[in-house]
Image 1 (cartoon, rainbow, N blue to C red):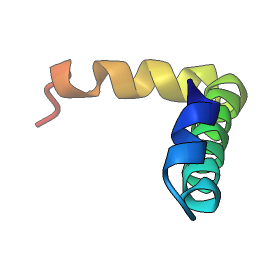
Image 2 (cartoon, rainbow, N blue to C red):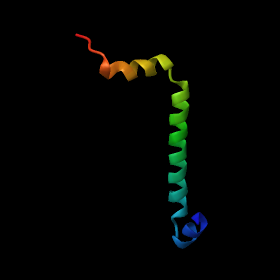
Image 3 (tube, helix red, strand yellow):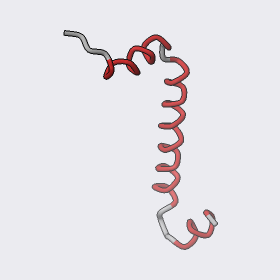
Length: 54
């Protein structure tokens, strides 16, 4: 299906593949960030709206 779409639209192969690569790289970076981030920071941020500090 992807190959048929590339064959029908002339000159769209580079922008389509580039956008697909950007999409995968972005979500790969988000996934890596979620594994690297400090778990204490996640815990702190999850309780932040619920805390009342005067």
